[in-house]
View 1 (cartoon, rainbow, N blue to C red):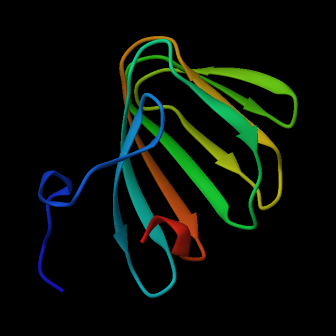
View 2 (cartoon, rainbow, N blue to C red; view 1 turned 180 degrees about the horizontal axis):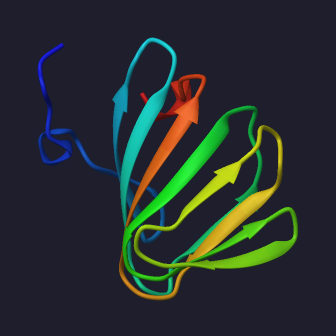
View 3 (cartoon, one colour; view 1 turned 30 degrees about the vertical axis):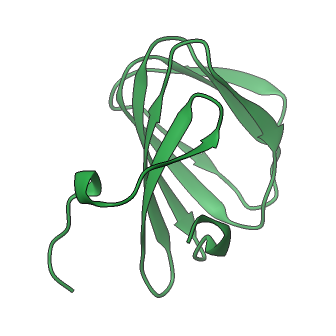
Length: 106
């Protein structure tokens, strides 16, 4: 596979205020998100293990009922099947890694 830029991948608004671009490997998915300030990601859970990395902005992540305020360069591990959701305190850019592949983001 040749190098790719997230900017060259198609963007889609997955939930209001959260626009994602996704790159899929054989065993995992890497997602680049832009979240508008004031946008909420409802609490949900999935079988995928997830790591969330904040590139810029302030993002509040609720993980299993506990709220964590994340800033640029913070990372949060979200285990499989643990309820989580989020809130963009400011405009944010985020990277999420999912394992296994997120078929629903293809």
